[in-house]
Image (cartoon, rainbow, N blue to C red; front, side):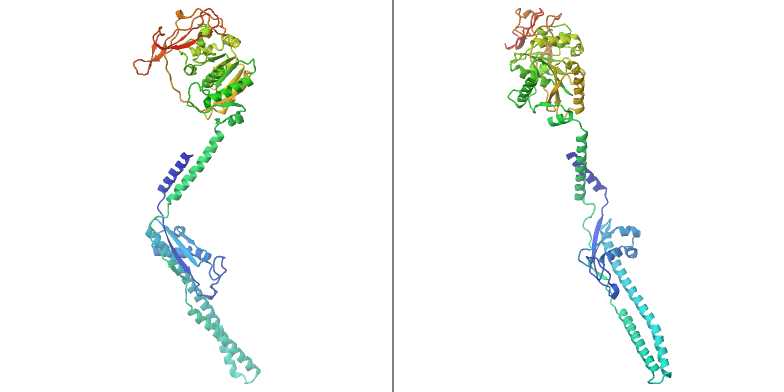
Amino acid sequence: MALAVLLGLAGGVWYTSTQPLVYRSTTEVLVTPTGVDDDAVSASSRTRAEINLDTEAQLLTSTAVVARAADTLGLDSSVEDLADRVRVTVPPNTEVLSIAFTANTASVAQEGANAFAVAYLTNRGEAAKAEIATRQQSRQAQVLPLTESLRAVTDSLVGLAPGSAARAVAEAQVQSLSSQIAVLTAEVNALASTPLTPGRIITEATLPSRPSSPVVPVNLAGGAMLGFLLGCVLALHRQRSDRRLRSAEEVTRVTGLSVLVTIPESSEVWLADPTSAAGRGYVRLRNVLTARVAPDARIILIAGIDADGSEVADNLAATLARTGAEVVLVSTHAGSATAQRLGLARRWAGLSEVLGGQATTSAALQVPPGLETLRVLIPGQDPQRAADLLETEAAANLLSGLRRSARYVILEAPPASSSAQAQTLAALADIALVVIRARTTSANDVDDAIEQFTAVRTPLIGSVLVPPGRRQQRRWGRWAIPSPSRQSSDPPSSNIAALPENATQPLAVPIERPNRSGDGLPHQTKRSKQGSGPRRTQTPAAGDGNAGRGSVSRSAR
């Protein structure tokens, strides 16, 4: 919205810069009766009875007045152009015409206003003179036949006897004709002496000190208003066309999928503290799941829609483990940050090795520090191979064994919008839960995920709404891979049943640790030796095919 207003202001500045400077000068004329008796016409409600100023305002822009003003100014402009540059207004309850003239220079504007005022008064005066002359001619034309009739009647009196009836009639005619001639002669004389008062200029036009147009504040305000309106239209269009989900209410209203919990924004990027706002959100999620999930529903699939959902899977697994329940977390793709988040060895046998028969389940499982009932199976050293092997019977056998020995098995799948692996894993799960990122996840992608899980008949119990994004950070630790020769011969205390596998030992691969030269970059080192510094040791099951859960400890030299 702010950008749209700024663009509107910029448009106002541009429009102002492209407009020519226009100067306006105004003169005022007091209109008075011309002195002709029949000058009265019907007036509007805002004018006096003697003069209709609205009519006079129209006469001021007549061709005769404009042509006379053009001659005075000596301009080559057409009559139509000059008429367009004149604006006449009538202030209410006055006999005044306000004449404004615009031009490209201040001096021409001043001269034009005065020229139109003079031209109007001159034209009005001449019109009054012409009216008087016409009336005089009319009276004189009436006097001439009356005079001839009077002469004829007077001549007829000579032959009439005094006291006769005919003479009396003739004398009466003479008297009547003489009276009419006298009246008409008086009117002619009165018209000849009538004073002409067309009006006068009461306010001379002044030289404008600044242009009247363009008006910078008006243009800027107009541009800002247009920008604001455009921003409102664009925002409304974006809101109607943008399918990204922004709130739990919108998720339910648009997709029909319930939101089990909304995780608030948090600065924690790994496991949330149970006492923090995010931690309390995961506790609520655990409570909802334990209340809704049937006792025989043990395998829970958690998949992001358009981004990694491992954060929810890891925190849910940790929250379930804190209740003392046996929980297994299976991370299935390379984009997962489970190993870093839970402090596990990343150079460790994982899902790809277990499904490929290179390691036993018990040897590949790792236990995060402080979560003794949680065991984690990372993607392994070849996540792509793990993705391919999830299509095989080995994956079903693995999950079947985990189901028998753990209360909850959390499957963390890749985003459903970019991989079919989420649907593949959903077919092996009892229930599914999707992770929606506010202001990022599209409703179309959520609808697609619902269709995927519905197609394999996996109940989708709801969703978790998380903030739009978290700052990622990289943590390095000196984690040691245990040597097979140092593994305990005693069977480890675990309830996890090992699946039939050919390989009996975890991979011993190089791990990452900070460069001792202080450059902060990791370098490769072989597994740590006894007493060589801080290390992480795990005692996996011996390769006898039995179930086992390694124990995790940290020691410092």
